[in-house]
Amino acid sequence: MQRYFISNKNISEECVRISGDDFHHLANVLRAKPGETIYCVEENGRAALVEITEITNEAIIGNIIEWIDEQKEMPVRVSVASGLPKGDKLDYIIQKGTEMGAFEFIPFIAARSVVKWDEKKASKKTERLQRIAKEAAEQSHRGRIPEVMPPVRLEGLIKKADRFTHKLIAYEEEAKQGEKSVLSSVLGDIQAGESILFIFGPEGGFSEKEIDLLVENGFIACGLGPRILRTETAPLYALSAVSYHTELLR
Image 1 (cartoon, one colour):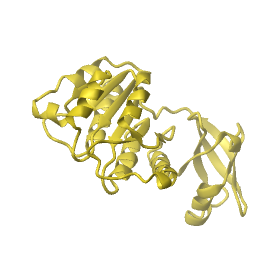
Image 2 (cartoon, helix red, strand yellow):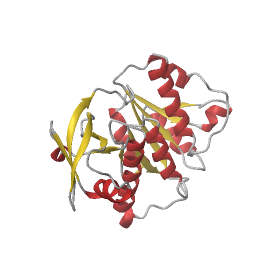
Image 3 (cartoon, one colour):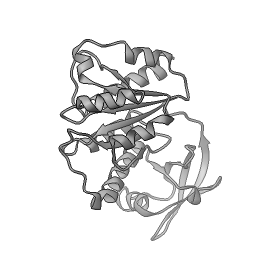
Image 4 (cartoon, helix red, strand yellow):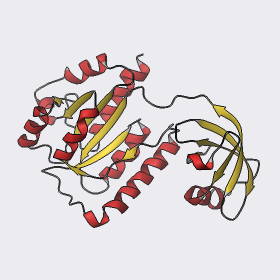
């Protein structure tokens, strides 16, 4: 069943109004008809089963049949900070990371990032990435849409890091040396309501200067198993590990 995120101004306890791109998708792509049902999610994460009652030229109106008691979000908040990668890899990280439960995404400009972020096009790029997160959240029946932050420099990322309970660097050199206790220890002790900031380097990895700066500011380097993962694979590994420890083992 289709799922749509609705702004609070368009949803009440009894009815829903769907407009914009979601209206176009429902009315023109899916050819929705009165009497069909969909899920609608308000901004605080509550989901409702909605019956479509009216389709106009600009909006779809629906009556709420019932509010659904569901919990689709991970008990800990996981933020993914990715060094800007090449091509469409950031699209992939955001799409799949959303499906796997990420709370937010923070792209950052790393020393070895090949991609140059065009400041003039930054807002449009961020909007497009946010749409990718929205569509993935709807597809995976999330209770919220992860926020995609505008890219920052490493120093800006460090300034944002104080609000996190745990700060981890996925570092390939740690994996090469066989490090395997840090991530396991953090996930074994983490409690519901806490937060993790995972930082991942671009294709060329981190420079030693970046690692030193991060460690000086409270980050802990960890390995992600014995194999070296691609920049678009590592975040998915980390999210899977968090989900397994906090949702399946408990």
